[in-house]
Amino acid sequence: MNETGNLSWTIASDVGARDGLGIELAIDGELVLEVFRDDTKRAREVSLYKNDVPLSLVEEAIEVFKKEIPWNFQD
Image 1: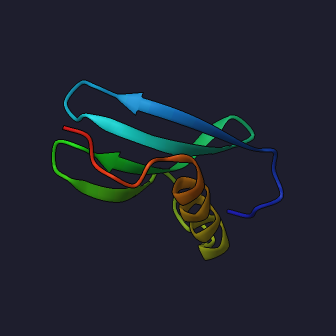
Image 2: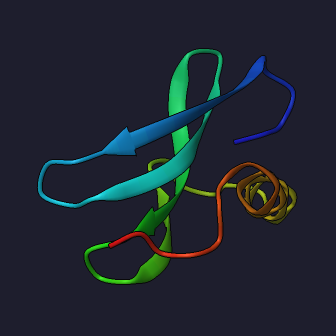
């Protein structure tokens, strides 16, 4: 995988099996990774949906997450 496609960021919430807020990164419309604040588990997690995601994209996603998503867990 490379970083040369059309990158798009989405802020997304989930209130199903988990409860929280996160950011998703898609390249050319295909979901690559998610950084998620799970308020139920009181954890922050990174999920990769593709193999061989460049570290620079993971680092960028974490920075976007820190900028866009409130750090504190919600009850």
